[in-house]
Image (cartoon, rainbow, N blue to C red; front, side):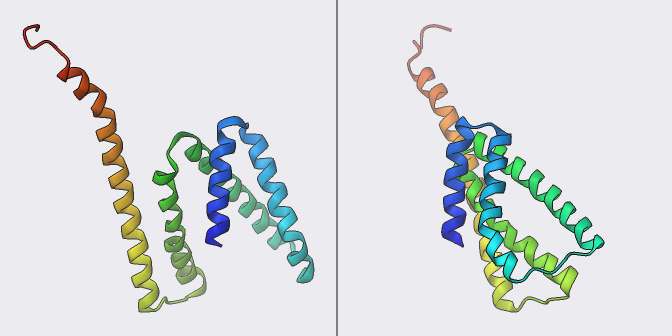
Length: 150
C-alpha cells in the first residue's frame, strides 16, 4: 500500500504542473473505478436508500479532499507534504474508536505517536530549511555591498 501511495504522490505532483484540476479528478476517478470493479462485483449487495446517501456523502468528502490534495501537491514540495499523509492513521484510529468502539492497544498508540511526532518534526524542519533558503540571497546580496555606501 505504501508503494501505491508513493506512486500516486509522484504522479499527482507531475500531473499537477501540466494538467487541469478537472482532468486530474477524472483520471483519478476512472483509475479507482477500474481498480475496484472486480472486488466490488465479487461481494456486491444492493445498497439501501440510506446507503446511497452515505455513498454520496463519501463521494463529496473524497472529492473535496482530492481537490485540496492536488492544490497542495501543485504548490508545495513533496518532502513537505508526504509526511502529513501519515496523519491519516491518527484519524482512522479516532474514527475506529468513535464509530466502532475499537480501543487501540499500546503498540498501535506507540506507533501512531512516533509517526505523528516525526511528521511534525519533518514539517517544522522543512519550514526552517525553506526559511533559510529564502534568506540566503539576501545574505549574499548584503555581503556584496560596499561598506562605505549607506
